[in-house]
Image (cartoon, rainbow, N blue to C red; front, side, top):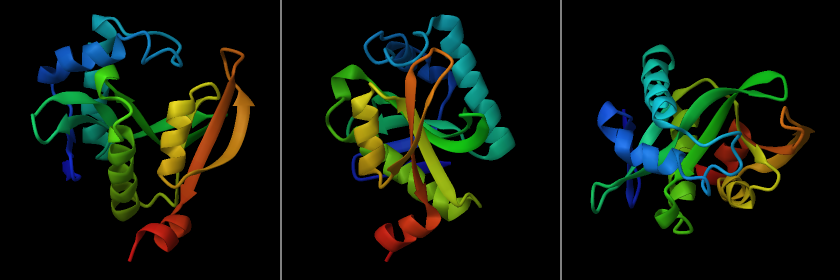
Length: 175
């Protein structure tokens, strides 16, 4: 599976992505809203889990690669997540610090959103994040999502939930 946008390629993660993904997931600034930063073992498990997701579900988090240089700058894709007690399809993203604030997360998330709504039976897609994670909230909203919920999570912090329905997507993003 491969998705292409104006500036990005999204493809399945491979073991060769370890170094680039480690630089993203082990960065405490990028992962400040996550329960922990990743060590080498967690990154290897992250790649392995996503390879398993590709086999089982046909989707997972994909490598985000700059078309111009071939540099892998993060991940973005669809996973099934426990959101306030229910398993839901969620678009998530992590972009390397030096590539943030350039619209790459929004571009990748939109490509994922469109792929999911064209290729799966899901009628609603979610993104969720800590309420303090304003850049991720902005990405969700730029992706056409609206805030639908908030709750206190396991870390006793407020988590916000954004969503877009198939009908909203069809009305706004398809010709």
